[in-house]
Amino acid sequence: MTSFLYPIDSVDVSTDQVLVGLSSLEGNLWSGGLAVLDFSSGNVLSNTHLDSGVAVCRFMNHDVNRIVAGCDDGHLHIYSFGDGLAHQHSVHTHQHIISTLCPLAHFVLTGSWDQDIKCYDLNSIDKPIFSLSEAHDGHITSLSASSTDPNTFASVGTDYMLKMWDIRTSTQDGCTHLHLHNQILTCVSWDGYNLWLGDDSGGVYHHDIRNHHQHTRHKLHGNRVRGIRHHPQLSYLASCSDDASVAIWDKKDMKVMDRQVYTYSYAYIYCTHTYTCSYTCTYTSNTHTYTQVVHPY
Image (cartoon, rainbow, N blue to C red; front, side, top):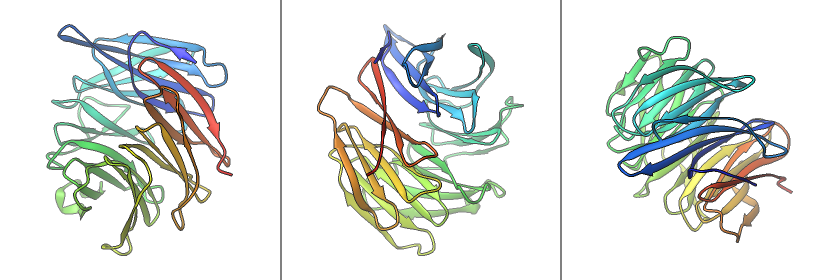
């Protein structure tokens, strides 16, 4: 277990490293930082301070030596990670908190409480490649790229909407809308013809985009679904919730294969897949993080 001075707001995991984003309100000022931990030992390999809280941070897909961080003040920061964290670029992207990031090769999609979605080339981030103003009628809560089509991505927000976009159009005209009841959607994961979503009351959805009106909702968690990830090669899906539970699903028929509830005082659970038959779950309380591998058997 590793402890930090500031509360943890975001976590991402690679095969051998854990990335932690920190955020704290001190007086009238936000401050925060980033830390990279060794997956096995939990030791801090490198850390850095920021003048704004880190709302979301991600490794750039398979390039774990490149890190993106979205902050409470709307800035996007790019870091390289070799012997330590080295700051490369910063740009003020949004007028409000950057709430979600989605890496796409050397591009990154950003979503914000200002309702906008933007796309940046990390090799030239002074201006966005495209910007979708008022992409949702509420805060953007999650973005997910399609695993089969590099030109498409999905977004969800507090307007109860799922939207699927084609970046070659980059306008509202290139978007497919789907209204999912009256639940605020909090996370999304896209694989081929299937999308899986979580909502703020513990529900998990499966949506088949070949049938625009066909979707099912499964109520398993007792609180907001914070993260949902599909395994890219196997038939597993993981969801995690603020009620300190993680569930492993068979993504074909949405049957629950395993569910674990953690009774100790961890407030959040984050999950990401490894490329084996397992999921990596990182549990955090206010200022502590602990990582373990969950095998869905």
